[in-house]
Image 1 (cartoon, rainbow, N blue to C red):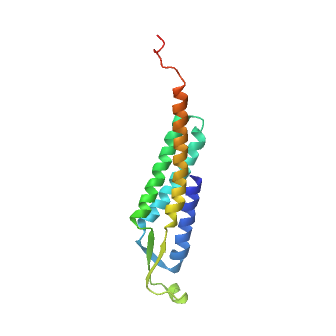
Image 2: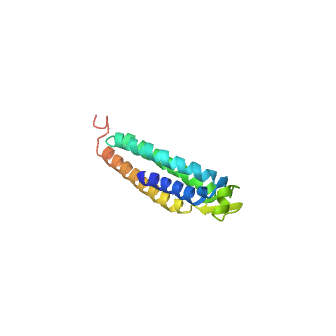
Image 3: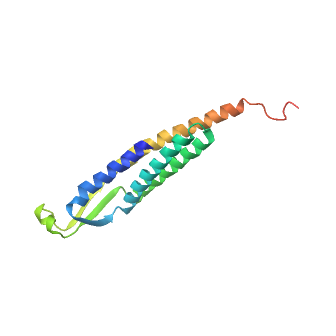
Length: 149
């Protein structure tokens, strides 16, 4: 989850530095990507902290990991809703004439989020499967109550 949080921070800086510093106005297309970055960032921080608190309790850890999977899944769906494209309209400002920019739109793609957040999702799902198989193994070794009576 810390990796997913770092990817969210990188993406935010990537979009802000490449587009917003050129006197750009509000995004014409990409609001969902902004929401996905927020979900991955805050979800990553929250679940990472919770994992540290409950790492010794298997049932709670499983719940936190499933919460992390849900948060990253929502983030990926939000990126998909914008087709991984972020477009901003250039606003008219005095700085745009100095840097050679005129009115129009500029865009960036965020397709790399599918891969990077997908890797994080895969790691989380492997951990969920590991905890579930350990739980099944440990519960299979215990005798059933009332079976020996």
